[in-house]
Image 1: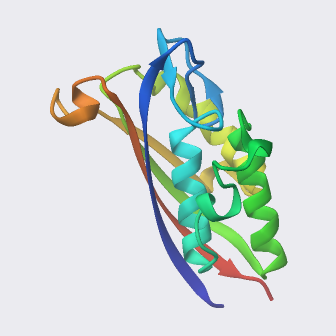
Image 2 (image 1 turned 90 degrees about the vertical axis):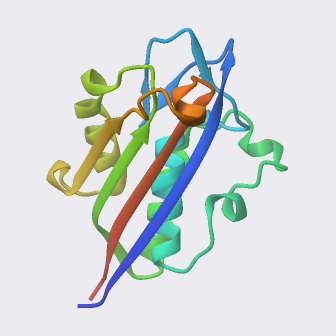
Image 3 (image 1 turned 180 degrees about the vertical axis):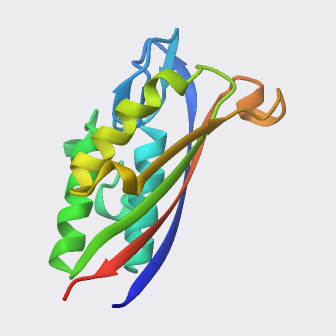
Length: 160
């Protein structure tokens, strides 16, 4: 079996008046994340990791912010499109490990639901999906509450 590894990274700044969506879950918070789509920083990092593992580019190539069709897009649907493309190319998700870097909001209560949603969209078991959250101890742009960052790594398995 052929295995491929991918890494993704994304960052979005905070913006008042937007809903905060991370990992496909609405997080009650006084600010949301700015972006052309719903700005789901974790799902964008995961999509980039998956696309990178298959050498298929990145989400900016597939879903350009210059295309009005993706304005306000639900990133779970974008991730679903990535997974369908991977299947067409002969791959399935082996596992995903994501880390969200945010001083606030606190994400621990929402992580189980994030894992469920990601596993469902990726067509895999929840035990293959890891989501973690950390702060930067008040340092950098995330520590200064300017935005949120996320890293993701994945393993793809070549089908049959």
